[in-house]
Length: 373
Image (cartoon, rainbow, N blue to C red; front, side, top):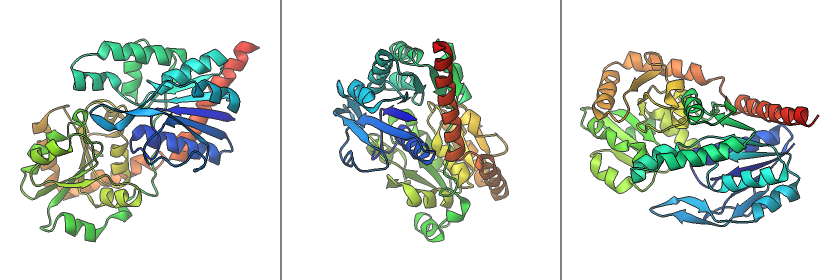
């Protein structure tokens, strides 16, 4: 099957959309399919001929105030590429700008399309401009309603899409690399460097941006015997360095180095309330690390309170601090949560999740064939 993946982000970008798109490409190739990727051009992106499949880079500009995010410019190359490649199906990864153009081109050419919802753009509009949620949802609804099927990563995301009038919504979660992220990768030397006094290591991994609410860790920084470790970069880093005294900022980390950091933590805390899935929670669980996360969005599907971690009210710094303090005082409970978390994700490999995606493709193609017949 010739699948064109139109994505708002792709490696070398480091974010959930880029990671999921890359994993999708790898799985399609493993199963003998022929993917083509269309993505915004980015500094440091490899030549289009490099990599496991062809990648068409569309001219883009950095988002003002957030240069790590790039927005594709209008281009006729999308429609031309779909036609020239002989696309049998279009996969739209978190469609909004480039994905909207991909959807329009697919519709004109009569190519079935699957739209993957990944980013809470309405929540971002509320965070950054204090308004615009309605406009964001109108855009989301228009793009996703034109697709043959929308795939939501969590039950909370599926409810929101349905509530806002998006039709044909199905569940498709994310996979996790359980070989890379595992408890055995804990690094004693790394722990000594991060916590020379034997402190409890509490980690956050993700973008450093306003919507992630990393500032909620300020109270945790004040707990005796606790060291906060922040992994990631983004526009909020300068203000967070001031707001989180004593925290260790490691910058962006990926691959096996990131896996060692995860496995070396005593506790993982996610603070952002707008996660449609929250891959870092799943990676922490795969690493055998208990989780504290907001009771909102994707974490509702991932964290079983009182078994794999704790859920706290969103945007509540005191609740985050108290949850960390409760687990800091109980090493046996942390260990039990970590074991249960690892067990909960062992079947959520990218291979298993990728096969479910191909089943969604088949259902869409089969439906199109049935209508045509």
